[in-house]
Image (cartoon, rainbow over all chains, first blue to last red; front, side, top):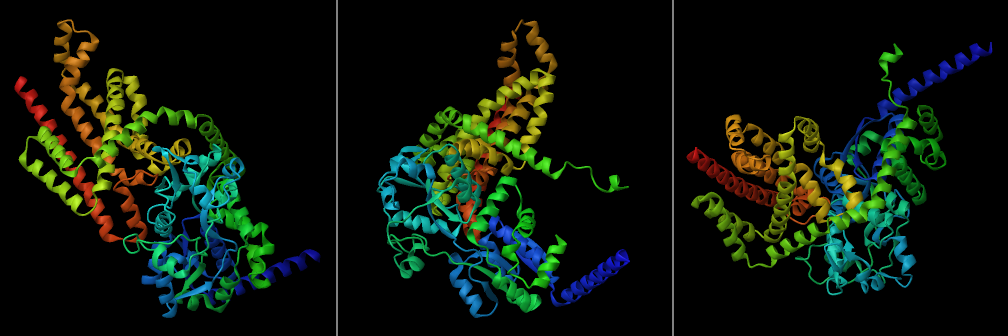
Length: 338
Length: 294
């Protein structure tokens, strides 16, 4: 009797599932999401993929891309539909325009808490030189961070060529008069170069001073320490019209702390239509707490897991986090699919 | 059936441990020997920095004169001399002088390194079939393995900068010169060698006075190919912090600056064509020389 009951029950449940997913399929169509080429964005995209596919019955395709190519394509062509972690400072003006024209929508204004860009040093640097309290203190001691190609100068590792932050670091380099103080702005060339230079310095317990951002595995793994700029944020005017512009367009930047990073989940009009209200609601609720994100990122590097592996791990172990993002019925379906 | 459907792959856990083990061993190796390696390459870095500074600090007319002079020495062709001078004038006019000089410096040093390392390897390969058999697959791997793969260990060992960039360039650019040195020496006429044997030439004499001179045109084709491939690696080298024409190209990739990318790309092409034509002409002249002697 019991067995029959179980069989019956399970078949009803199974039927219900097929019915559910069919109806969900009808509600949600094909969505293209950007699988951006850094770990946290990739993890978010993969989590979104699983949740939207298994929970809401969407058909999700991931396409790789960086910030600028992805945003340009979304803005010009409307593909991909979702950029999970768009660092909006670099594209503020065109994004505002696209949002006001209702071509793009900001689905979530803070998909990860406690993030930001800035200048960092290795933990060993602070241990050896506790007197270095702010960036201004560090800037007076270029000799602590010798540049390999010219040891009489200090190396400040900036942003890879082509990233939005490259201009910012170049302008801050001018604003803080770093050249006069004996510094060289080193272009690490690529994300791999930047990571490699941090990893090498941290592994060898050497001093390192440069640009990075949080949340990232590198910051978590090597316990990199943020540097206080020692000056206040010098106003939106200075930042938006000077610091983010090339030197030719603004030659006299004022020293400033890094602007608050605006990170958005941006979706296209098409996503709003095909995904429907439920998907939009999910996007709005989907907020990764900073420490959870950092822990996932360290998991990814420790285990050489890619975004997809990490998404499964996240969904399996952090139900307390993602369970709040979706209605319980949807959560059940996702759990069943894992 | 189950066996046929699913590939008997390594278990996920052990595969992960395996990968971690390799990574950890390499990391330990990098930690232990990174500094030693760095100081080993220090002279190379000095030379590179010195050359770049020299190119950058010399007045531009001098550089163009030197380049035109080299083109004349190599090719003895007025068209090429004028063409190179015009190309460099245009490069300077479009504001790419500094980057071009940086690229020129690294290409020059990379070519020199490749020649000094590559030709002896090629000679060894030509001498023994066993060496040839062991070296050839390594050369194949060096030419085909995606450069990003070896960038990782290079970064871990040497960090970012000119020397790791130079090594990345050389890994990709050295195979042609090794291959063609080997080929050139192997192609030298058996009869010529017999003749030199008959005159009682020692092995060294045979190598330096018969084989290498006769193989020179082929070796030179190798040098030419090595330069071309080194130029092709400029962008990749820029990804690990080498200054030069690759940097603006990377910038234009991320920002869709069509003109910037095109201009710097064409500057690389111009460099490549100048190098190619001059070295090729030089090679041809050597061949002519040989023809006359025969």
